[in-house]
Length: 563
Image 1 (cartoon, rainbow, N blue to C red):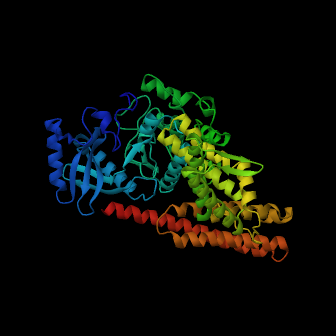
Image 2 (cartoon, rainbow, N blue to C red):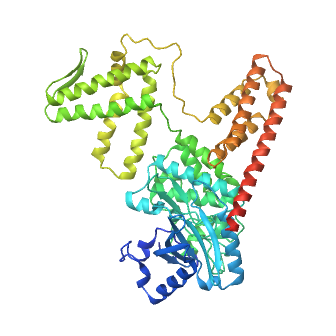
Image 3 (cartoon, helix red, strand yellow):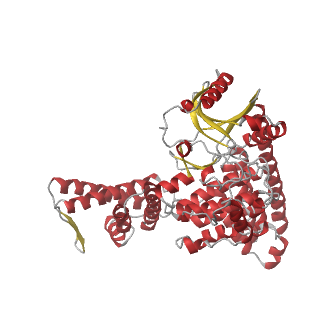
């Protein structure tokens, strides 16, 4: 990151030590770099004694010094970010920093790095946040290259969820960029860090005040001009960040900050498909809309961005265990047969059946094929058809494509990994199930794996039923789609919160009752008045859920502020 990329001062995440101290091993304590650093660390450790044990300095910037520490009582790693003493000495700045940090500490979301506490002791002002074992999005792109479109959509959806959650609580991040999105190593989950902390002031374009206001390459036009910003500014920055993840460059670049800001304010952003042709039309539409200059022309909320990207990405198929077992066996069997061919075995498939030479390796392959036939027959007896298996195979192919993009496999290895998908999801797979199913009588009611969340299934069914009603009925029930959409959004939001089972049950139940009321009306067993009553109850439930979600945020904020 160049010094002129960030206006006035900049912030760093907890994994950036290599960029600032490239010659020092990550395991080396950095207190020996200067007497000043050593003095600062010792003085802070005296304040934290008995509660946190500092292991080393991770890095420092204009907005603070970050230390890796261990929570003594809970025996967990944390990151401590210390406000620079020069800024802490400013009473107004200090008070504003603490207030905003405590507000951000009230955020509790799976895709936000948590802030455990915000404290001040004498001249020391700091906050303690979770330590994420992973890398930033920028580090991921620099290490493996640009992201696949599907994985980029996953990152964008998860960050949009986090932003939507924060925006509903009145918090705007104001510095969404590749360095502030962490990718957790164990789960590949995207997590937003430095939420609401990096920027605590504003700067006018013509006369900077010296406070942190964001990163010029990713800030929105209104932020670049020093205007008031809302959540739509973060969505612009998110789109610019995903633009970088897909192309390896930000939408705008210039040798100086003023030139870059001028581009952000006055020049239209390039179309994503002009630099990343493989981006789907639906993904490109989301990114291009969020990069519009006027906030009112963008997608308006993080939840809406997440929903649009989720629709473009599609839902992951979660096949039942029996289907997953067949998919795994099919992969192993295919690889064994390939190995037999390479070592001189003989395997062939034709109109007369499947032939394989015996011998040591041949017997192993034959056993695997017999086992696969048995699993296939059981699947058919349980009511699964070949199309169900094919859907699971194609879903597994997508997952392995994402894994290959992350692990940077060589091209020939990627082709090897896709060969077995094409084999079993093609004519051979259909032929194999035809042979394996000889004499198998499927049950009258076939078993089908469900790929959609309950609220999505119910909302789609309700909207379809609404559109099938006569025009006269639809004119009296015009708010059905909006209410259904609201309940679906709340259910999806509740799934991302802890201890929300009761609220989620009530929301899904309201959707179910609306669907049943629409079915009764369509069948002539209900009336518009009955459905209107259910709509009123659904509105009441939606209002109650909104109040409970808002109340939960206020409680979390108070608990965070009291620590």
